Image (cartoon, rainbow, N blue to C red; front, side, top):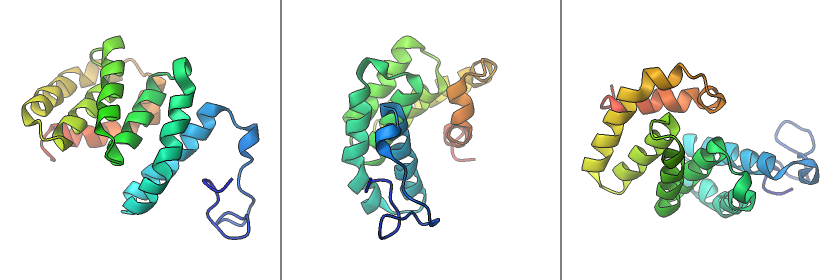
Length: 162
């Protein structure tokens, strides 16, 4: 239970008990770790994100063929934020093989290319993101709704930080 406990003595910061991991599905465990790592990233706690990354990456890898597009994006984001760029690029490629205009795949691909210093690829992918954005959002995919804030941030990045 340690990966999810935030307080001492087996209690969470809110005073309750940490969740019982044995009752969670593998996807729920991976999702909880994703949420925790993204929260650490937002708070500027890179060391904490790095600490939990191996558990999160292993949780996503354990999903195997049960990994849907949302899980691939989450897996790729954890990988990207913890400097596992090959994994991030591979997840973006997997998403885009199934749906070449998928906003989360394009965003993950462009972010990874930017971090890796491949500005030509990043620029091309951000342009594809912007060109696809409106039509893709009309699809109202569940993963778009779950990652609406990420898509808005990606839109700003694609527009040059505006």
